[in-house]
Length: 460
Image (cartoon, rainbow, N blue to C red; front, side):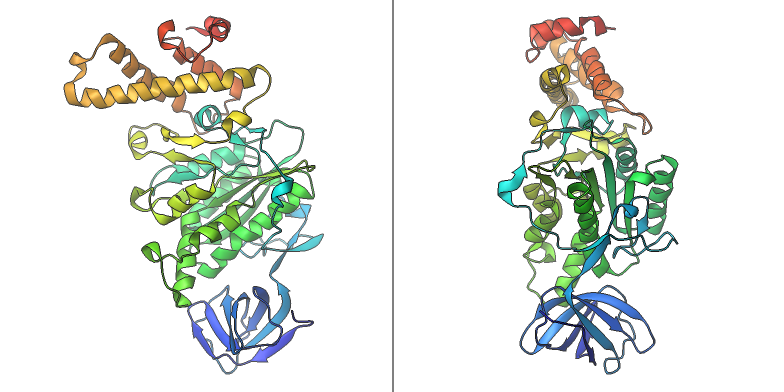
């Protein structure tokens, strides 16, 4: 590693966001650099590749009109870092952590490498505490646990932005530790990003939120840095300040597109659909920064937003995201067309950790059984709905009509929820039982008799 800053004048070449320079002794992988153009423009960057003869530098800015002979590049001899501190709460930053709200730079108590520090697997603590979002379909059937990573799979045109704003405004941890949200916009249109900022301020959550805003017209290379800056801040808040932190990267698909663009500029051999072969490990380097550490109060929970191109869940980005994460929440276009919000497709959605972190006391006892019974009854109703489209309603048996009626009522009375409504888990369980109480006892095969007796008074 370099012992001090070294400045070099003249570049060997430029290709998209990449510049090529002669090798510098002691240069390290991902070392921070600063390029100064002849017209005075200053652009940050990092080292992507080093050989004996040359180095490749990725710039987080435009390279148009850059004169190779006169450009100056300074190697800082250390990894790219970001300042961290409690004063980041309530601030809006760009993808590199620079103020985007017109205020002075926040006071930093330390500067941390954005690559983060890998959590020792022996010190990882198993996630067991419930993160309440206030959305019934999530809290009951795809429960999020503190320290979990649970993506939202969506499509263009679906109301995922509304769902994200609702989760940010309502999510909280029932435990005593304080709660914060780190939002990372990755390549969002300016209008959408500004809507997010307005919503955060109007709902009163801005004081416990850090927003990293990378717009669609910002340099694509900056999009690769933004989630790492956000996660570095989240790690400080979680493990230094003992806070439960929810991180929402939006949209991971835009991140993958930027990764493909940079890989193509480097001349790498493409893999599936042109993405680099290391797409899986790169996504894992982001998602695996979620978790809990034994002996620490805080946690990092991730809910990444992943847009499926053309609704294809087998596309490389959602496909590989599913390998790294612990389940998924899937939004459905059919439900959205029927005016149901949030349009969460219950059957393909799941949370693999939900049984280990749902509620407390009687809620913990009742939640699994109620969730299993709701899921089974709704799945039966969906099967009958498919059968009805073939043979017609008149040919259905009484039991099949009852199952079909249940699925319709589930979508209208339980799944559908106003974007401004906060439903606690107790309210959600009461709504679920009111639906189940419309079924005969013989259909409640997953509900213990003692539990059913406690809920009889909720029958409408």
